[in-house]
Image (cartoon, rainbow, N blue to C red):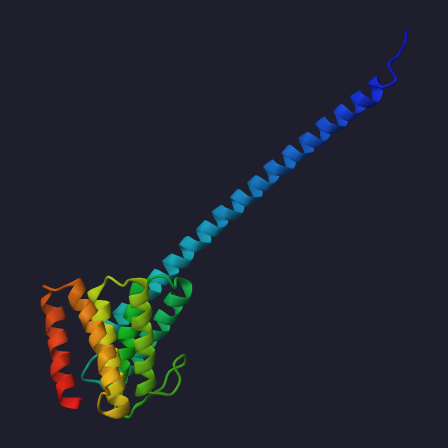
Length: 212
Protein backbone atom coordinates (compact mmCIF):
# COMPACT_ATOMS: atom_id res chain seq x y z
CA UNK A 1 0.00 0.00 0.00
CA UNK A 2 1.09 3.50 -0.77
CA UNK A 3 1.56 5.60 2.31
CA UNK A 4 0.90 9.28 2.40
CA UNK A 5 4.17 10.63 3.71
CA UNK A 6 2.38 13.70 5.02
CA UNK A 7 -0.24 11.80 7.05
CA UNK A 8 1.98 10.85 9.98
CA UNK A 9 3.36 14.29 10.71
CA UNK A 10 -0.11 15.76 10.34
CA UNK A 11 -1.57 13.20 12.78
CA UNK A 12 1.28 13.75 15.22
CA UNK A 13 0.80 17.53 15.05
CA UNK A 14 -2.89 17.07 15.74
CA UNK A 15 -2.15 14.82 18.73
CA UNK A 16 0.37 17.32 20.06
CA UNK A 17 -2.18 20.11 19.67
CA UNK A 18 -4.78 18.10 21.61
CA UNK A 19 -2.32 17.38 24.39
CA UNK A 20 -1.36 21.04 24.59
CA UNK A 21 -5.03 22.02 24.64
CA UNK A 22 -5.74 19.59 27.49
CA UNK A 23 -2.79 20.87 29.46
CA UNK A 24 -3.87 24.47 28.83
CA UNK A 25 -7.41 23.68 29.96
CA UNK A 26 -6.08 21.97 33.07
CA UNK A 27 -3.85 24.95 33.84
CA UNK A 28 -6.76 27.37 33.43
CA UNK A 29 -8.95 25.27 35.71
CA UNK A 30 -6.18 25.12 38.32
CA UNK A 31 -5.65 28.86 38.08
CA UNK A 32 -9.38 29.50 38.46
CA UNK A 33 -9.52 27.20 41.48
CA UNK A 34 -6.53 28.89 43.13
CA UNK A 35 -7.99 32.32 42.42
CA UNK A 36 -11.36 31.26 43.86
CA UNK A 37 -9.74 29.93 47.02
CA UNK A 38 -7.71 33.13 47.34
CA UNK A 39 -10.82 35.29 46.93
CA UNK A 40 -12.72 33.26 49.52
CA UNK A 41 -9.79 33.55 51.94
CA UNK A 42 -9.53 37.27 51.27
CA UNK A 43 -13.25 37.64 51.86
CA UNK A 44 -13.00 35.79 55.15
CA UNK A 45 -10.05 37.95 56.20
CA UNK A 46 -12.03 41.08 55.33
CA UNK A 47 -15.00 39.89 57.36
CA UNK A 48 -12.76 39.05 60.32
CA UNK A 49 -11.06 42.44 60.13
CA UNK A 50 -14.43 44.17 60.12
CA UNK A 51 -15.65 42.11 63.06
CA UNK A 52 -12.50 42.92 65.02
CA UNK A 53 -12.91 46.59 64.15
CA UNK A 54 -16.53 46.51 65.34
CA UNK A 55 -15.47 45.00 68.66
CA UNK A 56 -12.89 47.77 69.12
CA UNK A 57 -15.52 50.37 68.23
CA UNK A 58 -18.00 49.02 70.78
CA UNK A 59 -15.34 48.66 73.48
CA UNK A 60 -14.39 52.30 72.94
CA UNK A 61 -18.01 53.33 73.36
CA UNK A 62 -18.18 51.52 76.69
CA UNK A 63 -14.99 53.23 77.84
CA UNK A 64 -16.32 56.63 76.82
CA UNK A 65 -19.62 56.05 78.61
CA UNK A 66 -17.71 55.04 81.72
CA UNK A 67 -15.54 58.16 81.80
CA UNK A 68 -16.77 60.16 84.85
CA UNK A 69 -16.96 63.88 84.23
CA UNK A 70 -16.28 64.72 87.89
CA UNK A 71 -13.01 62.74 88.08
CA UNK A 72 -10.66 64.26 85.53
CA UNK A 73 -7.73 61.86 85.97
CA UNK A 74 -9.68 58.59 85.71
CA UNK A 75 -11.76 60.10 82.93
CA UNK A 76 -8.62 60.95 80.97
CA UNK A 77 -7.30 57.40 81.32
CA UNK A 78 -10.56 55.89 80.08
CA UNK A 79 -10.77 58.30 77.17
CA UNK A 80 -7.13 57.63 76.23
CA UNK A 81 -7.94 53.90 76.24
CA UNK A 82 -10.96 54.59 74.04
CA UNK A 83 -8.75 56.45 71.56
CA UNK A 84 -6.39 53.46 71.42
CA UNK A 85 -9.31 51.13 70.70
CA UNK A 86 -10.55 53.45 67.97
CA UNK A 87 -7.07 53.77 66.48
CA UNK A 88 -7.19 49.99 66.03
CA UNK A 89 -10.74 50.07 64.65
CA UNK A 90 -9.79 52.69 62.06
CA UNK A 91 -6.66 50.75 61.09
CA UNK A 92 -8.72 47.58 60.57
CA UNK A 93 -11.61 49.22 58.70
CA UNK A 94 -10.75 52.77 57.61
CA UNK A 95 -13.85 53.28 55.47
CA UNK A 96 -16.29 53.37 58.39
CA UNK A 97 -17.25 57.01 58.95
CA UNK A 98 -18.71 56.30 62.39
CA UNK A 99 -15.33 55.00 63.60
CA UNK A 100 -13.69 58.31 62.70
CA UNK A 101 -16.57 60.22 64.24
CA UNK A 102 -16.38 58.39 67.56
CA UNK A 103 -12.59 58.78 67.57
CA UNK A 104 -13.04 62.52 67.06
CA UNK A 105 -15.47 62.66 69.97
CA UNK A 106 -13.04 60.84 72.27
CA UNK A 107 -10.19 63.16 71.30
CA UNK A 108 -12.42 66.21 71.70
CA UNK A 109 -13.41 65.11 75.19
CA UNK A 110 -9.76 64.47 76.04
CA UNK A 111 -8.95 68.05 75.12
CA UNK A 112 -11.78 69.42 77.24
CA UNK A 113 -10.97 67.24 80.25
CA UNK A 114 -7.29 68.08 80.24
CA UNK A 115 -6.61 70.42 83.16
CA UNK A 116 -2.96 71.10 82.50
CA UNK A 117 -3.11 70.78 78.75
CA UNK A 118 -1.18 67.50 78.88
CA UNK A 119 -2.20 63.87 79.05
CA UNK A 120 -0.18 60.67 79.20
CA UNK A 121 -0.91 57.47 77.40
CA UNK A 122 0.88 54.59 75.75
CA UNK A 123 -0.36 55.37 72.25
CA UNK A 124 -1.12 59.07 72.55
CA UNK A 125 2.01 60.05 74.50
CA UNK A 126 2.28 63.37 76.30
CA UNK A 127 0.50 65.78 73.98
CA UNK A 128 -1.10 69.15 74.53
CA UNK A 129 -4.81 69.83 74.41
CA UNK A 130 -4.22 71.74 71.20
CA UNK A 131 -2.90 68.55 69.61
CA UNK A 132 -5.98 66.63 70.80
CA UNK A 133 -8.13 69.27 69.13
CA UNK A 134 -6.17 69.08 65.88
CA UNK A 135 -6.50 65.30 65.84
CA UNK A 136 -10.20 65.53 66.64
CA UNK A 137 -10.72 67.94 63.78
CA UNK A 138 -8.93 65.60 61.37
CA UNK A 139 -11.05 62.68 62.57
CA UNK A 140 -14.29 64.62 62.08
CA UNK A 141 -13.11 65.82 58.66
CA UNK A 142 -12.50 62.20 57.65
CA UNK A 143 -15.96 61.24 58.89
CA UNK A 144 -17.47 64.07 56.84
CA UNK A 145 -15.52 62.98 53.77
CA UNK A 146 -16.82 59.43 54.08
CA UNK A 147 -20.39 60.40 55.00
CA UNK A 148 -21.04 64.00 53.89
CA UNK A 149 -24.81 63.69 54.41
CA UNK A 150 -24.65 63.23 58.17
CA UNK A 151 -25.50 66.60 59.80
CA UNK A 152 -24.11 65.61 63.20
CA UNK A 153 -20.71 65.04 61.60
CA UNK A 154 -20.80 68.55 60.14
CA UNK A 155 -21.74 70.02 63.53
CA UNK A 156 -18.91 68.14 65.24
CA UNK A 157 -16.44 69.40 62.64
CA UNK A 158 -17.65 72.98 63.14
CA UNK A 159 -17.17 72.81 66.91
CA UNK A 160 -13.78 71.10 66.64
CA UNK A 161 -12.56 73.90 64.39
CA UNK A 162 -14.02 76.59 66.65
CA UNK A 163 -12.44 75.12 69.77
CA UNK A 164 -9.08 74.69 68.07
CA UNK A 165 -9.04 78.31 66.94
CA UNK A 166 -10.13 79.57 70.36
CA UNK A 167 -7.61 77.42 72.20
CA UNK A 168 -4.75 78.68 70.03
CA UNK A 169 -5.68 82.35 69.71
CA UNK A 170 -8.61 83.09 72.08
CA UNK A 171 -10.43 84.67 69.15
CA UNK A 172 -11.43 84.07 65.52
CA UNK A 173 -10.08 85.62 62.37
CA UNK A 174 -12.71 86.20 59.65
CA UNK A 175 -11.25 83.30 57.63
CA UNK A 176 -11.43 80.93 60.61
CA UNK A 177 -14.98 82.03 61.34
CA UNK A 178 -15.84 81.30 57.72
CA UNK A 179 -14.50 77.73 58.03
CA UNK A 180 -16.68 77.08 61.06
CA UNK A 181 -19.76 78.69 59.54
CA UNK A 182 -19.51 76.52 56.44
CA UNK A 183 -19.70 73.36 58.53
CA UNK A 184 -22.79 74.58 60.40
CA UNK A 185 -24.40 75.80 57.18
CA UNK A 186 -23.97 72.36 55.61
CA UNK A 187 -25.53 70.78 58.68
CA UNK A 188 -28.52 73.13 58.42
CA UNK A 189 -28.92 72.38 54.72
CA UNK A 190 -28.96 68.67 55.49
CA UNK A 191 -31.35 68.94 58.44
CA UNK A 192 -33.11 72.33 58.43
CA UNK A 193 -35.81 71.21 60.86
CA UNK A 194 -33.55 69.36 63.31
CA UNK A 195 -33.81 71.06 66.70
CA UNK A 196 -30.33 70.12 67.87
CA UNK A 197 -28.66 71.22 64.64
CA UNK A 198 -30.40 74.59 64.88
CA UNK A 199 -29.46 74.87 68.57
CA UNK A 200 -25.79 74.10 67.89
CA UNK A 201 -25.62 76.55 65.00
CA UNK A 202 -27.21 79.24 67.17
CA UNK A 203 -24.81 78.56 70.03
CA UNK A 204 -21.88 78.87 67.68
CA UNK A 205 -23.11 82.23 66.31
CA UNK A 206 -23.52 83.59 69.85
CA UNK A 207 -20.00 82.47 70.71
CA UNK A 208 -18.52 83.84 67.48
CA UNK A 209 -20.13 87.27 68.01
CA UNK A 210 -18.18 87.62 71.25
CA UNK A 211 -14.75 86.70 69.92
CA UNK A 212 -14.66 88.09 66.39
